[in-house]
Amino acid sequence: MTDSQPLPGGRYISLVTFRRDGREVATPLWFAELDGKLYAYTLGGSAKVRRLRNRGDIRVASCTLTGRITGPWRAGTGRAVKEAETTARAYAAIATKYGLSYWISTVFSKLARRIRQRVVLELSLISD
Image (cartoon, rainbow, N blue to C red; front, top):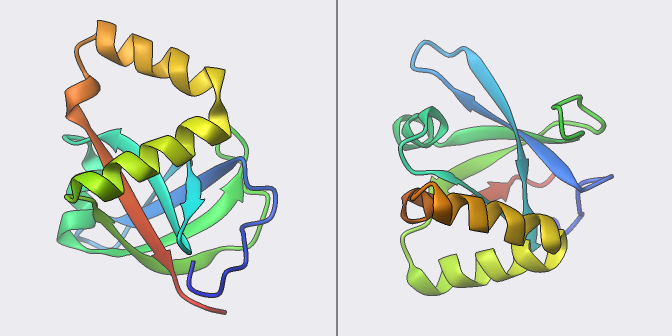
């Protein structure tokens, strides 16, 4: 994050991406902070990745696992990470934060043959 202020309550974030017609779509995600930015992962073919490629602006807020908002909204930009080093560092940060839950999720992704479809998202938030 550009102002180095963590999101309050920071276990999950609600990521809002925008459809072409401007409507918002919110998705709760795991995330980790690394080098002043937020990183999350999702499947590469997901609609949120397509929306980020079409329109890179986002909004982010702390939330519960089910998506109930628990903190203020912050604006920013997002992109799918292509750099292998950044991807590896982001996964390591997420694994450290979520521990066993992350590893269980990864095992199920491997069993479902979806592990290679994962994409890391880099979210840069604008200072307040």
